[in-house]
Image 1: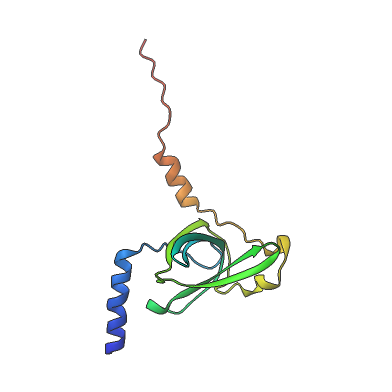
Image 2: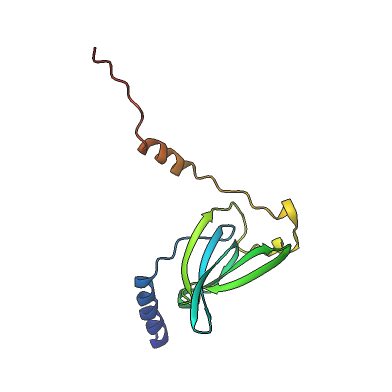
Length: 139
């Protein structure tokens, strides 16, 4: 490992201590809370859309989010470890078979929808963890 890789690894470890970044992949709908500074004020803006791709690795990793705003497609690229990202939340998981969903750019309406991934293991675990009502006859 050369010195540059070692420095990047140290920086990445520092960033991972402060931030919790969920596991998400292309096809997932995410809500990214971004810090925006307007003059002296700073506010948080939510950007919700479909992840159409991830690129890079390590500290240089980024992801592209696409949303439809007033009938117009808007894409924004976020570095994963950017200090302007306050949080990333997964709204729903998407079921896709591609790593890059650039074909969504030419799709409109229902054809641009992504099927939701239904995790059967999680739903079974949730059913098992919820207590069932038991009736006891102690008469």
